[in-house]
Amino acid sequence: MKSFLALALSASQNFDFSKLKRPLTLVATADEESTMSGARLIADNGNRLGRFCVIGEPTDLTPIRQHKGALSMSIQFLGRSGHASNPALGNSALEAMHEFIGLLLHYREQIQRQHQDPAFTIPTPTMNLGHIHGGDNSNRICGACLLLIDIRFLPLMSFENIISDIDEIACEVAAGRKMRVEARLLGEAVPAMDTSQASEIAQYLTQVTGKQASSVAFGTEAPYFNSMQTETIVMGPGSINQAHQPDEFLPIAQIDPTIQLLEGLINRFCL
Image (cartoon, rainbow, N blue to C red; front, side, top):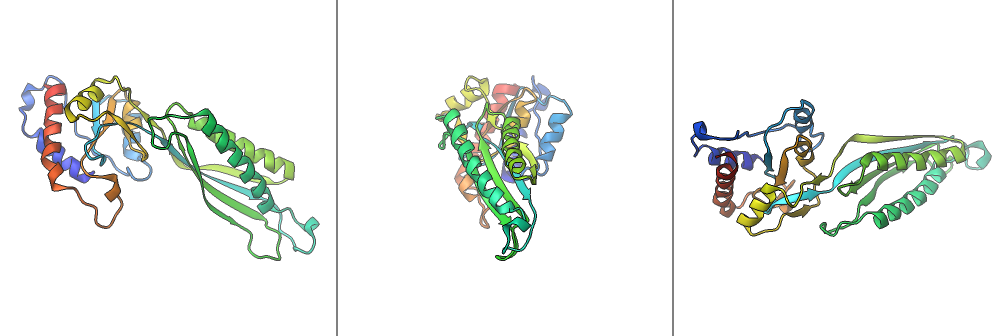
């Protein structure tokens, strides 16, 4: 991402800005890896940056027009601890969680049957049960049990509906077992990206790269730029396979082609 800013600066300096017919804006945002608060702030300000946008995530210079959305949730059942010798002394939150997980996996099967998109390598929404913790000893009834889950959802799916559905399932289990439950979103959901295949910039980049605009599994800030009526494509040098590694690198062979692509975009859409 940092290399893309350098290459964008390099490409843009080769033009006479007084001849621009449409604005050229370079945007650097904060906290892209976690809250995406920089892009959210720009979108919330209600300003339009331009008609088209390229986000320089590492895609090996393949134009990307779709990615899944993502959300994480915590669900905690709060029962009552007690001595294991007499089940009547407590109300096991771990047993409530066991029931909830069964219903949750059934819900996962349901949304995977209902929502499929062959444009994605994994064509269905996914749900990962990533962490569970409950109780403190074998001879105590479990008083509290916590589950963390990760959901990757397809474009056109409503993450508000997903959150509401999971909350409803948890509340039904808690009510049936006469205990409390706390279900909450961890951070903020990242919306899915879905830029039309017919978008002018998608068509242009498909033509000049010879690669059809496709999809990726990772999330980006693209949905926030799309929300500003800015048709957005994700495309940049480097591979996601090197991302978050101690030896992250950018292939030297992709530097000049990236600058040339950006120069072509500026010439086509700004001049």
